[in-house]
Image (tube, rainbow, N blue to C red; front, side):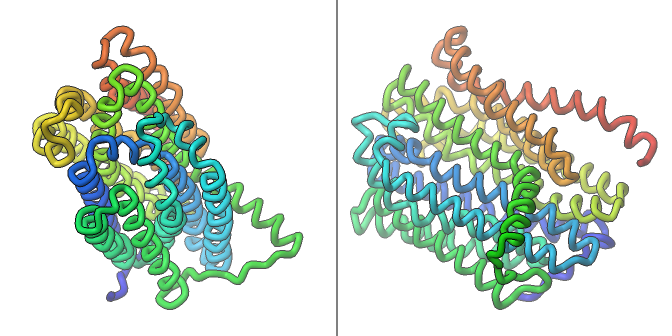
Length: 453
């Protein structure tokens, strides 16, 4: 794995962006392929109830992803600024703090789920019919959730350390192993949703091991700092973690928003369309990582560039990175929305066929797919605010799209549009959020950039 030659402060922006974006997107594509394979194997090998059960358990996974993005993006911004000032020790201390504190918090979440598994399932919209399948998946996937979180934080750190290709391998290798294990454990071994959960746990723990191996043996600049437990060290850790969390909190809200979308959608779909409705909605949720990977890859690739140059006060390079990010977001967002509307049937056949759940998904998914372009743009725009330490705006916009608008849309639109309102809830909330961000951005930054500041 040859080292990547990366200089965030001087390299030509398009070339620098490509060196980060291509391996980041490829790694995420394998992760999305894994998610699709998991849904296909479970849907075809176990049935639509199993898909619905995994969708009920999914918010716990999203909580781990949210913590990972909170600490990963936060530490990436802070460490990039330290590195722009030549302070490697401070950047490495921040990295160590991000890993240790996030692992402790996720460990507590796992203990709570193991202590109250049925209550957790009911909280996320589970029914008595789905409960055995939900518990089978939930209890066996929890070890992998910790590994998933550590791997995701590691992706931010490794890319910032100048090794985006290693970060790509740390995503691709576990994803390929997961797909193979999914097939073996669901079909030949007949382990059902438990097999899918075991496959996920094994692969995610492998990804975490690859991250730790890099930081201990292959690092370039950043390293794991031996933690101290004096009163002063703990106080400084809490201060640093608080600032990292503030910067990364918008990403946590973004994952919490996806969890809220799933939980609210589960409740609304099961109330109006019963278990088949949840199964149909779960297919849309399985498709979402395909959408998320484009917006997230663009945002994560621009983050270290923007943050590093923000630390150096280089506005020209920040503007160039922002313009390139927005062009890519528009192109990819429109493309995946069009594909989602025009080619939904062959995609849906991979998960469901010959069932009432398929009929519901075939009718509703084209409506849901119109949200993809706005979702991609929102993720990139909010990522920009985060990169330049404008955490308040990023948090407000994430709250707007994920809770303030989306939950009322889910609850109210069915009263006006019938069952179609369930599918239009996410597109409406994402679209309104985009136009609010756009209007705010034009008002806030036209004067600033017009003077070349």
